[in-house]
Length: 185
Image (cartoon, rainbow, N blue to C red):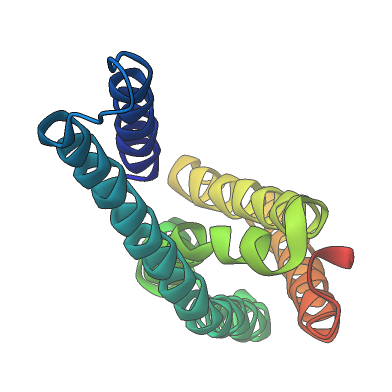
């Protein structure tokens, strides 16, 4: 929408300029000049409305950061609970537990991840998402090992996933600690 608005502004001013320079004497053909002025003003209004929407959308991402913090907290909590009961869980049952316990929080975190960039910049985003992606890969490895029946691998990668998601949580908390200095400026 912003690009379209700027296009209208440009077309309006260009048309108004062309009408102004092609006049004979000191007369302005107002019937041609006013439509170009209206097009330019419509572009200005659209650009301002688009800017206001962007500002509201950025303000809404504050909630997204709390969603991310909640999601990663639930993921770490579920991994701690699984670690505590790991001896009593049959190897072929892990994948269904992973699906049940983690799917919605992993999806929620992935969908809201752009809030990190908007509030803390690309470097913070890369730090958090690097840890998150590694944890997600390890959790996927637990799922695969469970389906394949490799008990030792399930327990090994469960520990690795837990460590990575703890790092993700620490990186996200570090971002929250930097909220007084957004985007490192």
